[in-house]
Image 1: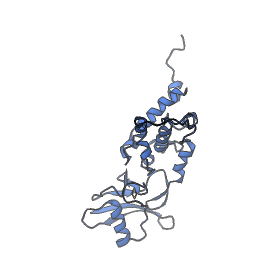
Image 2 (image 1 turned 90 degrees about the vertical axis):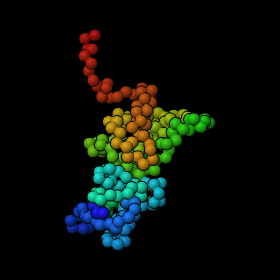
Image 3 (image 1 turned 45 degrees about the vertical axis):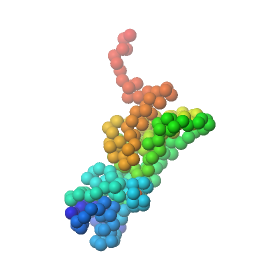
Image 4 (image 1 turned 135 degrees about the horizontal axis):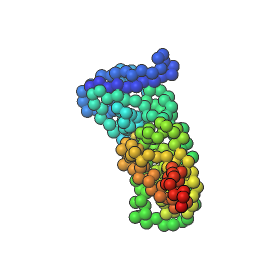
Length: 235
Ligand code: FES
């Protein structure tokens, strides 16, 4: 089996290249394949890894333009491996996630007004899956909106806002809801790419839809909708 890897090293000339690597036959994950290449073929190959079991989110990358966790994915002949999109590539498959992390701060996605409410199991279930986010950034990389609007808050931040705004212990969701009106809930196209790639089974598309409803309860409406003319001017 042969796979291709998009390589990048600012210190190299040329800095970018797509290189092919032949792998031995056998059942291996992509992470194991990368480790094989690094130990047996090219020690300069760089990639992130951590838990090796789909928990830490460090090994997210793209295969054939689709986000995967390398430790969960079994490569097939002809696969092309590349780094996540919309992140600065540091080297090969290692990206800098710090800029994307800023969306959590910008969206103010934390509890603002603890009201001391007890959380029933049924209420806990409402936001349980969103709490499983491992910040792998797969959803962020898969989002087509970020290709045209780099300021878009992106799926994982909006999911986290939903998680906290829907928490019964939140007595003041307004700061969060206010924070996601610009380049936020209304800018999503609801394409569902984020939902399709989430390794945790989170559905950011649904969370964003729910946040639109919460936004309406706080007096906001879709700015595109409000800008439309329905020809009622004569009435
Ligand atoms: Fe932790 Fe893959 S190494 S998710």
